[in-house]
Structure formats: C-alpha cells, structure tokens
Length: 73
Image 1 (cartoon, rainbow, N blue to C red):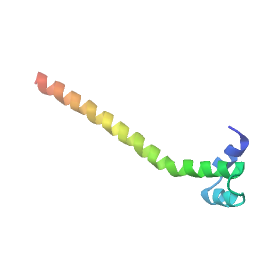
Image 2 (image 1 turned 180 degrees about the vertical axis):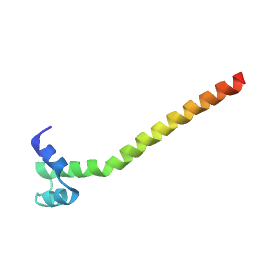
Image 3 (image 1 turned 90 degrees about the vertical axis):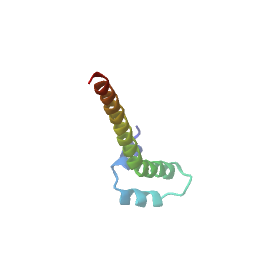
Image 4 (image 1 turned 30 degrees about the vertical axis):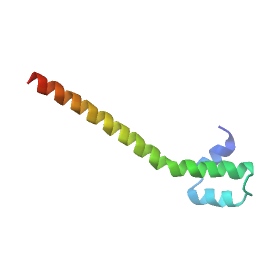
C-alpha cells in the first residue's frame, strides 16, 4: 500500500472531501481519493452481507439439527 492511500484512509470524511475538492477530475490523486470515498460508502453493505451469510448458515444448522432430532425422537 502506498503512503498516499494510507494517508487517505486516516482522513475523516470531511477532510477527504476537502482533499478531493483540491484536485481536478481525472488526475491520479483525485481518482485515489474517489476510490477511498466509494470504499467507505460500500462498507455498510459488506458488513450487512456477512451478517446475512452468518444468519443463513445458522438457520441451515438449526434445520439440520431439528431434522436429526425429529428422526431419532
């Protein structure tokens, strides 16, 4: 990871927006800051996806256990 990416990750949302506004579109630093901004926006969706996957696996395990218990009871 280069030092600019690390610096962008350490900035607050307001600082990142201010930094991004200082560059012309289609420049390297603008594109990097835009990528960081989009990464931050997609983070809640990623977390929600992992939670959904975990709940689905849990539901399958509970269903299998219920079937096994029902067949042997």
